[in-house]
Image 1 (cartoon, rainbow, N blue to C red):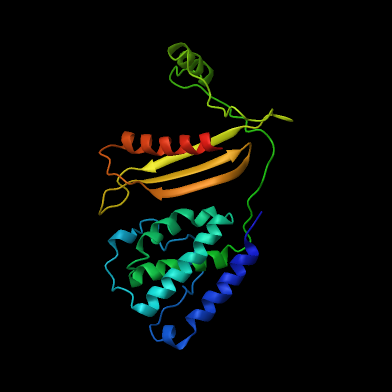
Image 2 (image 1 turned 120 degrees about the horizontal axis):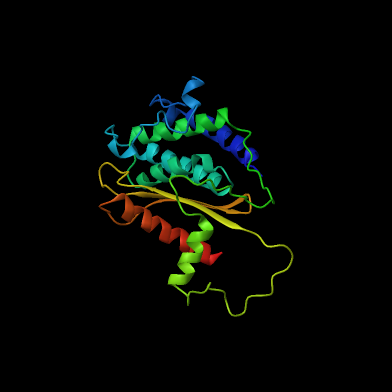
Length: 233
């Protein structure tokens, strides 16, 4: 599945908006070199919260909001390669800076260079090959130990759930958090992607609402959010 048609149309609109007189006078444009479109941000060390460029005027502000709206819809359609960057820039919808707008345009330039990306839906089961190291216990052993410690624990299944049909499916979750990723507020950012077998079905990228003092606590919060999403599924 892909969002190629929407991406092409969005790029057409963005390029047309940049050529209008009220925007052209500011000299704002998509990056001309191919190298600048190798990643969504201009560099891996880019931190939007540290940008100290001038604030956007009313015209630039509206332009920023419109472009962010396009990017967020692309993320909904499966362009999860720009999900994290779009989430970071969405935090400045109320008062963006010129530097934030330039990063948005770099994302569009990246999309222009990678406009034929597809998300593969694979029905096969996700077979994890576990390799022990340093006498680490296997996942099966840990499951057994947890069942011995919590013998009354049961999976939460709705009382009116229908009988399952066909083969079973696996729900696999990958979750992480960057502790104190925001250099100004020291708030962490949660990232989650959920697979049904080998097919990605849900993705999440959002800053946490609290300031945590350790990597452990920020990742526990991320794990709680992921657990709630899995229970919802």
